[in-house]
Image (tube, rainbow, N blue to C red; front, side, top):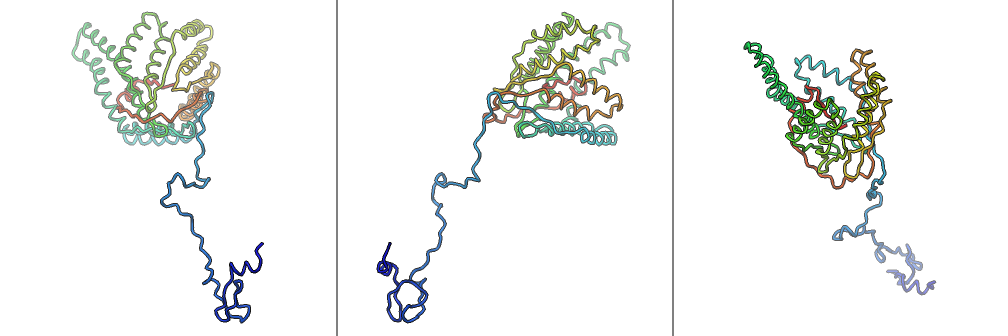
Length: 388
């Protein structure tokens, strides 16, 4: 401890009047003169630490602003989509669409279809983010006009002109063959066009989906598969369906990453034959068990990177769900369509999961262009070919 003399030597102050050396104080101990301590011993002001000119890597930010570490998905982690929509909300949208379609003599139909699709996509969530739909009513209208001009108008002319011109049976037969050939081209073109357009207008986390399959390749697959199905009296059908599904999935992309399908339709041949044999004894009800088996087969052979899809759907729930929808339509005279649509989405998502780590770091945007002509064709001919 410092002595009094040491303190005087280190911290002493001198009285300007009597010259007495003393420890700092407000007034002189001898003569009482007021002493200005701050002049002799100014109190240093607190200066904030200097950061200008210092490398940002050397400046430590407060811990509250630090980003949490990235948590990677476990190899066996399960993911599931959820739907937040309600039948009441969709019913309101449908009623407005119907009124505006009547008022506009049908033109609002295309914009109404877009509103419904935006609602359904926007209410579907995966890993905390909603899907988006970016199609427009104008695109649908233009697509419909193109479809009518290049497909429906020729079909109408082939049906009407032979009778108006009084053509013979040979010409009428040729017209029927041409009609059949146009339909054989029309259906696969509609399926490819619908998928290409729909995926190009769908996004998740601002990254678009896309379809990059060639129409000509699918056209060959479709014509050859239809021919084999016909000459085998329908026994080739499960293989044909699998090949169609595989083509659609394996040419679908999310950003720059593609989906994959490795199923072989021969695996469905046994369940398909069993369903045919039990068709009459079960009054056709066993067909729901085959449909459930087919859905499980399609999903379980579909993958996206390290993600594998899984389905647990069985025939019993599918039968009860279908009968419930039919009862709702009959009882409400069709007014329950909105609730049935919501039930259908919830039912589909309930039994499908994604398993495995989801790597989003390497996915980049690669948007593709597409027109709505195929979508219009698909909708008018009811040849929808959805992912599930």
